[in-house]
Length: 282
View: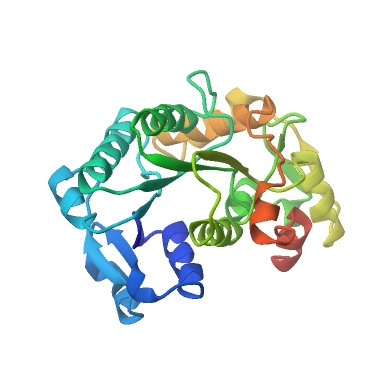
């Protein structure tokens, strides 16, 4: 039995969709806080169980009979996220889960500028020390979030972002989901860490060049980080603005520049590229 936490989210649901093509739906379990949100999965024959990261007792019960668990990282950040992940890992041990897949981030460390990577580092350490068999997917930044970072640059001809010459191996979320499904249904992934990104990395100057191929010439303008953060503060809560600022700083210092063939190998094909993604959304 394979269970996926956060199954009502984009990555969890997409992974289940790919798994349905590779294994029987009745061997799949969607763990969600509110089962009513995934009635569509239940209608497809997938078991739906209530599982709350904050309720250890419910987690142990919901993991009964599960051999492999996919821990989709919590949507909160900081100590609360690590506490929630700790609850899941401890519940997995108590319930007799044998193997845990965890969705992490590139280059997790206690010194990371992108603060969620600190949470991922601490969770990875907990998982390694748990005694459970693990597989860690260090997922790069989604191509899916790129439109939000680029804004209306294709129309204005100017792409403002404080990333300098830093690069990111952006990757499509659906490609990650398919890679996860492939790993979950094949052998040889025990106690391995995969850097999940594209085989290439791209800078924001590269992004501007690709946007320029779709019509109007786009110029990349590397703005000061403080100005970027000040603008974010006008529209977002301060903690959220700081996370986005930290993301920009991490990109600038190449903390998210981790091109790797792992996903390509898991997919058996080349992942969707930056140019393909932007062309389809032109």
